[in-house]
Length: 592
Image 1 (cartoon, helix red, strand yellow):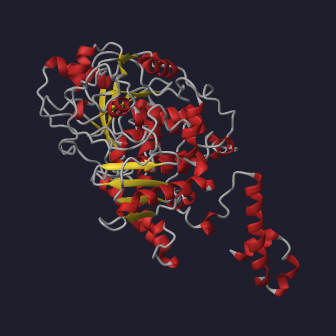
Image 2 (cartoon, rainbow, N blue to C red):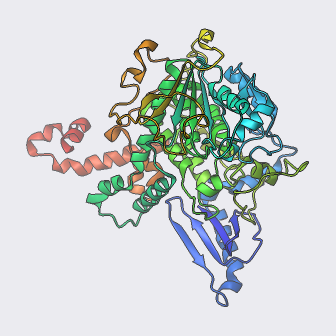
Image 3 (cartoon, rainbow, N blue to C red):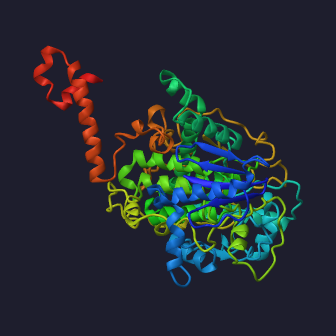
C-alpha cells in the first residue's frame, strides 16, 4: 500500500513513515496492492483543518503494520545508517566509463561511446552518452540526429555475439532538408557496417498507447475483489479486456525480431516515431530471448536500466503520476511479457516471479527517481548531477510534481534498503539451471559478413514479412517510412505463422539457418498466454492458493489446503470406487 497527499493540481507528495508532510492536503489517495484506489477528500471549511492530523495518522498506522516493512518504510532508516556515497548495485549508465564498460562486455568492437549529448543539447530524452559506429564523427552524429523525431537518431541497443547489431531510432523527420553528406551519414549509421539492413516498423501489429491504457483499466476493474463480473462470465470478460491479446502480439513480434537478429549477421533497426515506448519493449524482449546473460538477476536489471531508464522512457507520464492524458502502462505490459517467458522457460531465468512483482509495484507506486522522472536530464537535474551547466532544450517535456520526498541518491535497484534479506532471497528462482552459462552459448564472430560501402539488401519488416526496399532514407525519391504508414510499399498479407514457423522467413539464397544456441522462441497461441494471477488477483486470497509458494512453510500450507480439498471431494466418490478413494491421484483425476 502507498499513500499520497494532494493539494491542487500540481502538489503531490508520496508519504512514507518518517517523511514530513509539507502542506495541508486537499485529499488523500491510498493505492492498494489489489489495484484499488481510495480517495479521502477534505472539503473547505469542513475537515480541512484536521487534514494534516488525519493524513499523518494514516502514515503512522501504516508504519506500525507488518506490511510497511516490505516497502519503502525501512529505506530511510537504513539509508541514514550508511556513511559516504552509496555505490549502486548495477551501473546506472550516467558516466562514459559505464557505457564503455558495457560496450566491452558486449564485444561491440565496431562501436564507440559518443559524448555528443553530454550537455543534452541534442535531446534531453536521450542519455548523455550512447553508442555510435566507430567511424562516424560526432559532428556527423549531431547533424544526422537532427533529421529524426525529437532528435532520437539511430544508435546501438545491443550487439549480438554472432555479429548482428540491434539499433533503435525515432521516425524520420521528413520536414528537414538534409544535404548529401547528412544523408550519407544517416545511411552509414543505419547500416552500421553490415551488408544487410532490416528496418522494423515497430508499432505495426502492436496496440496503440490508448489501447494499452484502456485494456489495463479494464483488467484492473475486472480483478478488483468487488468486481461486478459474474463468475461464469469472468473468462469472457477477461478476453474482452484485450490485455492478453496485446501480450501475445508483443511476444510474437519480439520472437520474429529475434530470428532476424540471430539468423544472419546484419543490422536490425527498430523504428518508432517517439522511440520511447515499444522500441524499448521489443529491444528488451529480443535480448531476453537471445541472450542468456540478460536472464540473470543482475543482467535483467542492467537491461531495464539501459533500455528503459537511460533510454528515456517517460515513466512519470505513462504510469499516470502526472495525470497527463498520455498515460499508458507500457512498462507493466513488458513485465507481463517477461512473466509469460518465466512460466514457459522456468529453468532459463535466474530471477523469480517475486522479483517481477517487486519491480511491478515499484513502478506503480514509485519512491525513487528511477520511475519518478520522464527523461535522463530530469533525473540528473533532480539528483544534482548536472549543476555545472544549464540545459538547452526543454520543450515538450513534463512538469515535475512538487513535494515528493525521495532520496535522489537511491535507485530502484537498492533493494536491500526496502526489503528484508529473507524477501530478497525470494527474488532468486530456485528452478534456475546455473549450467546455462552466459559464456557457453556465444557463437563465433563472422567478420566476412561485415562489409563497408552501401548495403547489398535493404528490407522492411512489417506485418510478419520482409519486403525489399530501394533505399534506406526517405528524402531522395520516396516519402518517409513512418510518416505515411508505408503506403509506398507493397503490403503483404498478414501471415498466420511466425517468421520462425515460415522456416525463418528468409530468401532462399541466404541458405538454411539452424536454431542458434541460447535462443528462446515462446508460444503465444491460446492457453499458452495466461493471466498473471499473483499480480492481478492479489486482492482475492482464495485465488492465491496453489500458486507455488516460495518457502517450505508456504508449501506446507498449500499442501494442507489441497488435502482439505481432497477431504471435501471424497464423499463425491461413488461406493464402487471406495477402495480407491485413498489414492489422491485417483480422486483428482475423477474430479476433473
